[in-house]
Length: 408
Image (cartoon, rainbow, N blue to C red; front, side, top):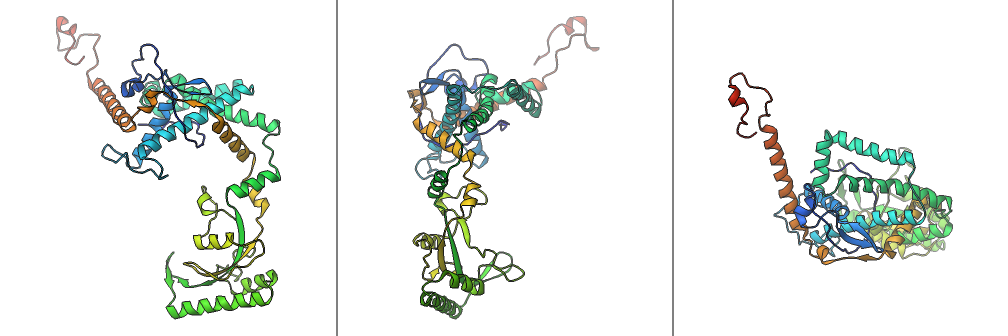
């Protein structure tokens, strides 16, 4: 199944659904052939507004396809625990599709509520997107087949693409109204929500670098010497009433936390912007080993810890203020928009019907796979069949040429 080239948004929330039924399904309505649910029926409502089943089934097919890429098959245990530990793989896939469906719907509704519409240029860009998708698949027929295999119509797919542009227009509206301005209170909230802290440390190592990225553990005697050295340094700090000035002096002189070619520490100012390990979600977000994090978070600002042992060695930690300017690089208008979007999702009223509750994700996967394979086989057979001739073949009589051959 071809992965759709479309605009993607991110979001997370748990929810439920609703269903209904309309007229005769289209011939290419794989949603109906796969689930018995027509793609134009109402599978759920959000704030009283019906959402076509195809919008949910599109995201479900994408979620299933992603898991198939990572090895999920008919033989897999679909009832095995998902990565969140709170649901099964099947339940997780179902919920993921619901999360994205709700996200797209609340953005659409909020844009309508605030009078946000798309410009002619943006509407034209949507058509360009569709043309690019069509060209990427090799033509209109292949593109429409791809949409059918993902249980969505051409109109439904365009509606999903519109949400990307609506979200951008909504962002511009909120920014113009000052609702995305970042305040110091927002920075405080961001720090608290992400468990952000900052610390300096003096590391007395208990292992040395080996080849490549490997390490060689110190002997027991060497480890005992390292522990004693850390204790001696902590005693010096205590005798100086835990002077931060002395801490910096000892850190720059003794810490084994990595140095450049000039012998200077890589982080002479300490780790000024550290995420709690459980909050790390993206590239470039720094987190420490559990023992370090626990020790640092137990300190007040300006307080110094006793030596804390990790796999790296012994750490004497000084808790320091977070660099708020670094935080502001992440706590931006985009972050404020994410917070607002999450609020809209939290406040949304979602209703479901029995059709959704009884939707079996594994059976959906099996039926959709069977239907798409059958369609592919039929298309291949049709392509391999001799083309119908409009003129007599040289080896035929006039009478023979008017009779279709087998397979025509």
